[in-house]
Length: 404
Image 1: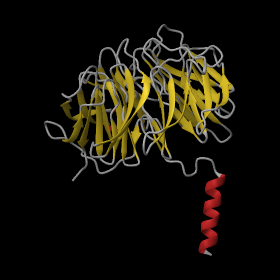
Image 2: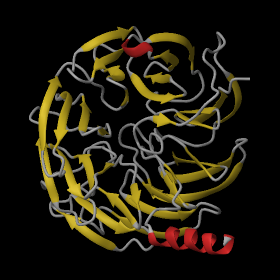
Image 3: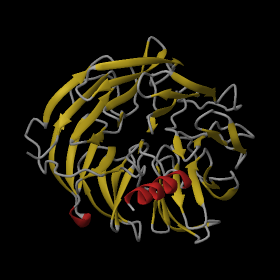
Image 4: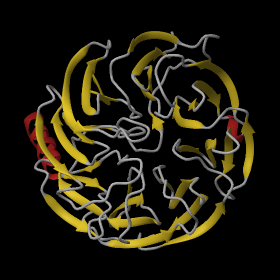
């Protein structure tokens, strides 16, 4: 009886795509800024949580680390060349692999967080090189260049997309006239489908998936639109125009309970869209032109959206049902994530803050200054197994935030 049961489980695992997939990626398992952690500190010491270790050798860059399979993967640029570095959980180097020429014109270094699934790493350099690497030793499985192979057009700050993987597919946004969005076979790099969509170029956005009963929708922001596509075929299902100036649309769209929240400080503010039950259309529910941030993301908890406002720089809470800002904190604009019922904000002044949501009345519980590293404080923090990882330019720090 036991052997028969095991056989059934194995057969089901093989029959259902993605059944055994374990994924580590941009802004958490579901790309919504939520890290499923527990037993974390509810307050920090005055000088911040204990620093377990730091690394000062990862080069320039703004990409966040990815933690998977007892390894930490993070890209960086050294002397105009890109590398993907692997460290163990104690911060010791394991391997590094060259990823090609990196962006050096402005804000030098990579921007994209690696995606790790079932021992394979998927990474996109700022010059459009898509690589699949073996997580154990960094060996290259395959590579495709979005500029030369997929006829893409790079953007003025370099490609920033953190690749999205689902089943046997990896999705990317070359931004070409006829190859705006593309799906590749994640094991071979071969083209599955390409879509003109709206014919727009890329806009620094990392896409997300919306799973409905009858279809899965790929949604992302391109330079003039938020778009929704059938992930299986590449068919454009709907588009929503960005009618104000601005070509920087970095924040991954948030989906929750039939609604899409789009946070765009490129002139369009924060907008809530109702998605039709069949997934084929959207309609605007509300818009707040003054709210929103450039690249820090936001988190939805219950009926509230938490995140930063770009100008003036502060931390805000919005009513997700009306779009009205209900409260704010004097804490400069930055990146926002959630773990164990607390918000973590790493702002552009280098301050890391622990914030209690308080059902729409956020309270800054603790904060400390990140003094290590170089250049801008743009990378999003990551939390894994009770450790908070913060990348600041050429440095990465690991802080112990476990409750003893």
